[in-house]
Length: 203
Ligand code: 5GP
Image 1: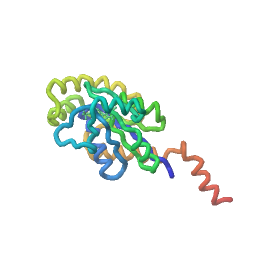
Image 2: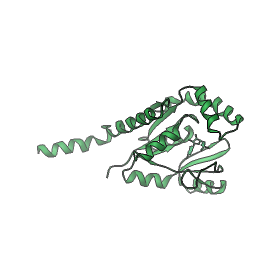
Image 3: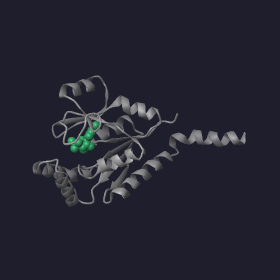
Image 4: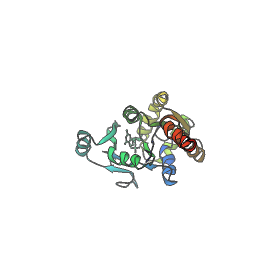
């Protein structure tokens, strides 16, 4: 059975990573990994769907026991990817998307060099501000902090393989699909299989 591919999607808060990932998951293009976090649920967020909401102690225990694929602390809260479900999905041949921030993305790149890192950009900083305000989940101070860190984040795009500008959602989702399809057409680890298939017809 062919292994699935691991896609990592990062980008500034409000750039629309979540919406793009949701569309990809709903269309069956990939499986989403549910992260663990120590932050409190917001609005309609549900346990096991948006996040696994855990205590600081339980998060630390998961790290100590080697159960996290990656983790990071952001604005005082910890976020991380439980390892087991991701590895199981990949082994079943499913592609998996991790929607995580950059510190975590770098850890994944290090431990899974075959993972594919995609950076989602907002059309502009002013549009990003507008979206954060419209989302209404952060205080004005948090929005200021997030927009100030955005440029620093964008400067680290060189660590990524692909970018998507999320101006129009459907074309952003289409771009993501194109990237995912292209990755499946990489020769690299499929060369032997391709050669064998054609060779078997000739012999
Ligand atoms: P939020 O609190 O808005 O849901 O998420 C804050 C940030 O944490 C976002 O940039 C989100 O992508 C990131 N994040 C969510 N889950 C994970 C995770 O499992 N690992 C890492 N490293 N970042 C995550």
